[in-house]
View 1 (tube, rainbow, N blue to C red):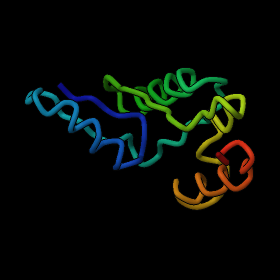
View 2: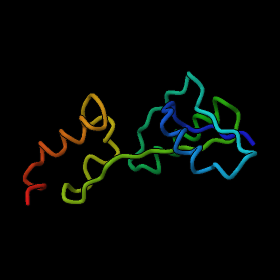
View 3: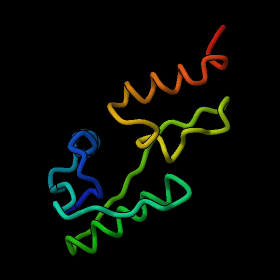
View 4: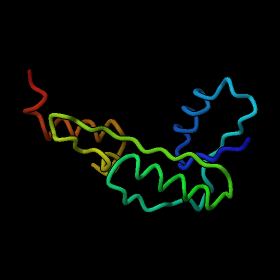
Length: 108
């Protein structure tokens, strides 16, 4: 069975390969190059559904969407669904900004 992952992130594909390693008949692949959905959901689940639907539309295959980020309870759940856009750069850059900008919450 072919399953298209609603992302262009090869790291997410590797994670899914690891989870599905005991399913030899499952062929996993990234969304097509033209995949660029508008993630305008208000939750991780809504954004994952948007990605799954767009990947299915473009590939005409069964698709799986994902959305992730960091939600800090002490910060009211921020940055939440905006984690990837919290600042330019890597995940490490975003985490550094989060900690430095909200330093008072992380001091002991």
